[in-house]
Image (cartoon, rainbow, N blue to C red; front, side):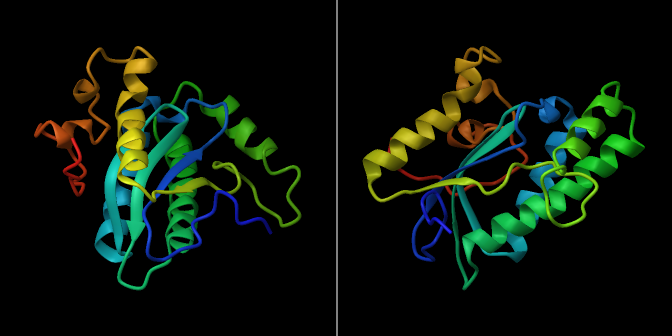
Length: 183
């Protein structure tokens, strides 16, 4: 198995992108809060330190590190497994105009799997790049925070509620991060 784009070190921070593919799942508040709550759980119980994040409609970016003996690849595996189940549960149980086609999409995503599984939300793996230099870290934080600006969701990065740009601007937010003093 290739280790390219995998979090193999337990000492380093990583820039990570996790995606559901071409489905805009995270356009609803209930789905965004599944991710926020799961990230909070990982911070409190799995040694996850988050330095920057942004929840977009079909993916999430993180600059993060596993601490206290936890391994980031295990934390990401557990995060994806838990949030997959919650996303499907929410699609089934709560009002959702896109329910049928989204469930069909996630069901079809299982067609190639050897193990029996009803739904597959997240794409395999995650894109992880080691954050070795301050230049890289600063560049990735800017990239993460400007994602909603680039997509024309907001004009200013700190106006996007589901991003650590708000933390860096000392604005109200639902997910605490460790602010890096690089700016």
